[in-house]
Figure 1 (tube, rainbow, N blue to C red):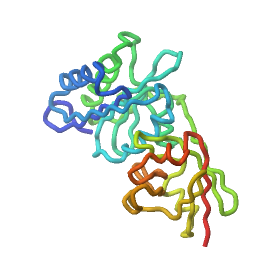
Figure 2: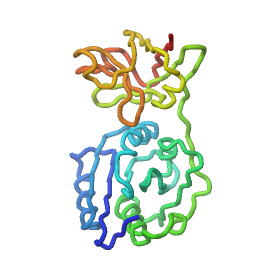
Figure 3: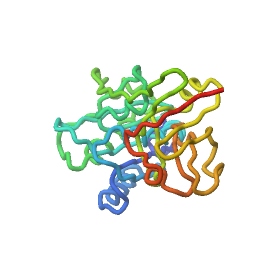
Figure 4: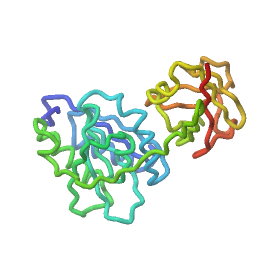
Length: 266
């Protein structure tokens, strides 16, 4: 872990679910620049449905392996819980992730053995979570950069764990469901590349939607002519059904929790 004393470089990624046009985003930039003047700070604002842990986890899956080692991610995301807000930190992919203890981190990592640690929260100033909770926790992490998380924060013994809806497999067919639709209308499904290829076992594949049959898996959107629908593994190695220069969800009638059928054949 890198030091916060200004002598060694630190990268902090701040990810929030409110837009760049909000005053909260502007104030977050100011707070982070003031708190960590020697750090490289990356800010990401992706408006999301408030408290939707599944959507939050899918967004995280798409970028969580892309940052360099020792990056500190502040996942400043809204929860809808009626319970007092709680926060956790975890170490995964040689990076650090701080966020609400809503279960979205466990859902993104899919690692039942990964320990989570409690980020201190004295209950004060709850309206300003970044300055009251996240920034002090990151400072503490950087000040004790040579120690393990278990020596800095207290272990969370009971973690909030959620599970994905699993594909339904029968013979040479598999039913998968759409979990997320991005701003371009690309549809993401509940299977990743490793699991898919294991089930595929080098066979040919076709995907049947309500309005189209898709043959094979492409490497890039431009592998198909403009307007054509295709399947590919995109960010986070999640299976996507997309349309080259089109909104796949609207044009193909694919919506959240809508199933499609995958067929493997020789």
